[in-house]
Length: 127
Image 1 (cartoon, rainbow, N blue to C red):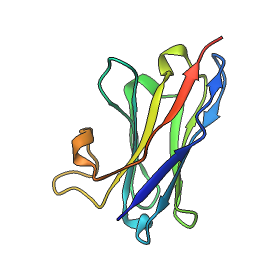
Image 2: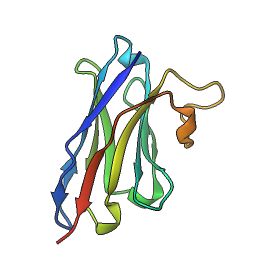
Image 3: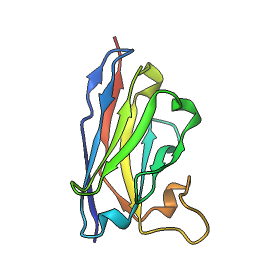
């Protein structure tokens, strides 16, 4: 079973950068599709970014394009959302998700399609 743990959430000011980390306990991490979602109270879970097994970015959400990037280090079994120019609207719990793959797409925007999830890490953007 794959275990995912997020870290790096913090209270930051508008305009600040922040990098989160997802660490996986999986022998086959390099074969997993990895995605990051976020969810704020009263809102649906939103796909932030998705990355394939060899590090190519599949997707960056429209709300964060130009400000967020995603990378992964398979040797360290980690994935990193790199966030810049943070805004109060970015305040949310951020979740790492992964799956062995999908039958009809390279990634999915549907949270229910992902098998493995971390517990979330809180990012709060406020002055």
